[in-house]
Length: 108
Image (cartoon, rainbow, N blue to C red; front, side, top):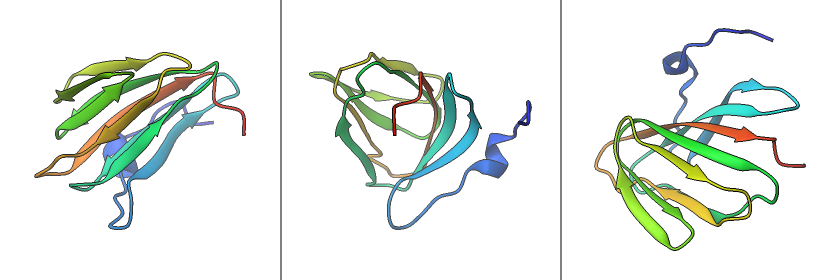
């Protein structure tokens, strides 16, 4: 496994839907860069037994954690605790990139 990565070179966008690009993965956690075109979303969902951290790299994210929803810009960190519904929308007008860390990885 590589120990160093450049997220700019790993950031792939898709016109069809938000794109998850893996940076690191072990049996204890994963780290991805999620790429959203304007209007794309990650539908609300929850993970039993796994916490998720969103860090806004660039763009504007509308993030829902439970019943709370906020617009978050670059540098914002948002925690989705295990079992709590969470989702993300890119309200636009530009692209959105999130660094996402989850521990432990969800069971497949």
